[in-house]
Image (cartoon, rainbow, N blue to C red):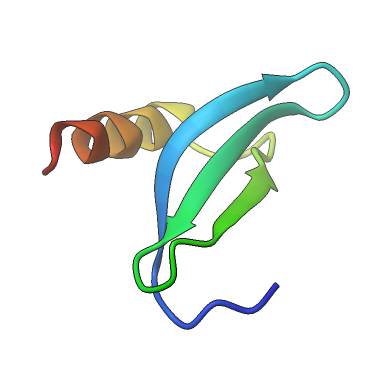
Length: 57
């Protein structure tokens, strides 16, 4: 899928086969994109970004 805006992380879901999956939303078209959390990703930073987004920061 091609999006023309910035993908903003809005949530995380737990997939029984894939593990943690970040859910992104395009700030222009509203398309939803999912990406698997890598082992070397900073989970604390991911959670902080999503928490701030949910607060409207």
